[in-house]
Amino acid sequence: MFKQGVEPDSITIITALQLGANARQVGMVKQTHAFSLRSRMLLVNREPTLGNALIDAYARCEKMEYALKIFESLSGRTNIVTCNSLISGYVNSEFSIDQEVNEAKMMSSINENVDRLSSLPEEVVSDILSLMPTKFAVRTSILSKRWRYSWTLIHNLDFDDIHPVYGLDCFSKFVDRVLDLCETSEVKLFRLFFLEIWVQRSSVSRWINEAVRLNVSELDIQVKLLELPISLFTCKTLTKLRLKCDVCDMDIWNCPSPVNLPCLKTLDIVVSREPSGSAFKLIRGCPVLESLSLLVMWRNDEEEYNFSIPTLKRLKLTTWKCVSVINKVVLNVPNLEYLFVDGVLCSLFVMEDLSSLVEATVSYFEVRFSDMLVELLNGISGAKSISWSSSTTDVPSDSPLPKFPNLKHLEYKGGSFRSGWPLIPQILETSSELEHLCIEELDESCWIEPRSVPTCMLTNLKTMELAKCKGKKCDIQFMEFMLGNAEVLKTVTITCERLRLEEEMRFCAQLLKLPRASRYCEIHFVGNWSHSAIT
Image (cartoon, rainbow, N blue to C red; front, side, top):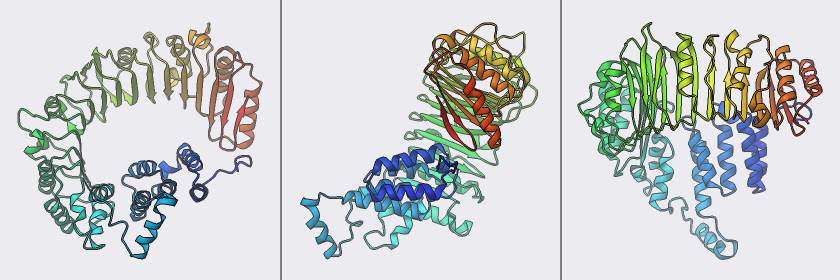
């Protein structure tokens, strides 16, 4: 198919999975699974048909750990077929038996009409039912008397409006009834995910309070209207909390003082405005916090945002909109390993302690002052991996980039005229240890060859990717310089888009003619019409 330029579709993938499952060839199933990920079929399809086929294939190959991972990755896209595939796999796996020793037992079970699913241990049934939306788990009560109350022992309570229960009043009564009958002593996950229906604040607050009573570990609340109960702010079992509300107001953050969440390690919250008077009160009450995601929808204050959190390892900070005022963001996070900042850059970053930083992502669609970007880059210059994406920013010509002494992996995307091709030589010159470079979707300005070859190209640069390439003159000039001077380069991947067949062939031929400083370098060309390796 590839040689003829024909791309497999989801039907092709499903057929290949069935072939691998029938032959009990888990290697074939894994290869097909890998292709579905590379081609993004599994991620793009909203219906879980392909995911269901993967679960079934892994289950038939008796690889339930893989089937379970696929099921968990389909969160929000499961249907009754998905659940049945997983349950059937667990049953077959639980009762998969040695041909010589247990064949007689299986025949005996069939002859006596034994319900193999019902004979599973209670804890196994509870684990299976906990993997599906709670509405589906409750429906199993109609299977038999044995199953009537099995769902009451589930440790995940997952309510959403993707698989609706008819009528808001009916839905509220359903959630109330489930919480009333739930017999588990510890809820691992309590999830409310309502994108369409407007559940009353009082109901949401009551349900969260019940989850706290049931010693909840993970709380995931994404609703239209939100009111937080007082009990939430002193929950001693909570380890992970996500709060997102479409209609935000300051009242939801009227929490008691002090807040005490002694076990909370992951916090993901959205605030409408002025987080200094709301979210930071909650953050300060989390003494072992390791991962923090803060989205500020509208920033209109000048107060300093001070992140002084010694235990923090991951930080994601997004500002969606802001007025003209500038504030400071102070980072005193000695154990921070990953930093992600995006949205609108309207704050001056002050890095007091970022000594453990390994990876940073900078992705802005608006930068109020270009000097702010330079200061931010200075602050993250010690990272080993940086992803830098900006569609509107110019780096001032009188403000050179900082040195990146530890940088080994760099992804650079977008940029305006001065931040496009002309910035690449400066990036290479300031990153002497760079091993991997990925450039994506740059403008069509001219490539300006540097006066000397950057150090990284002589000693360290081994892999390079040019993504969303348009086959322009600047692309050829850039590739000519890189291939002709990168002495240890091993792999180059070029991805093209919006090119006609003859344009792809012409571009590929031009690349083939370019001299290479490294005799071990291989070029992989990926286009709309062809996939090839130029050796």
